Length: 68
Image 1 (cartoon, one colour):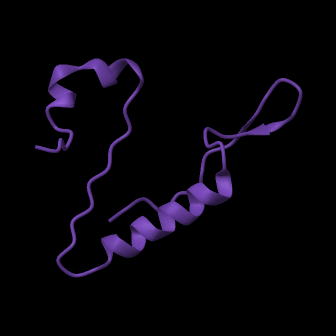
Image 2 (tube, rainbow, N blue to C red):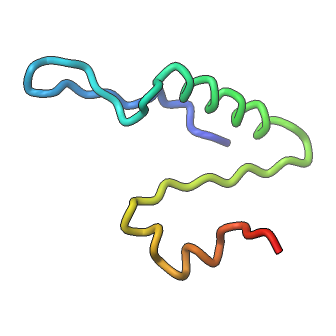
């Protein structure tokens, strides 16, 4: 089952509320669609977060889908 937590937010030193998503509302909609998929029979959803440094990792790259 996918997590049910809300999108994380924090305040900067000036009191502004920030989050990691450029478009928080779109991120919520996308996560909702993923949750709908996860609830479908015969569908398996696998997601992962990676850092920019990990994108160059050959082991990680071997897991990515490639055409051809």
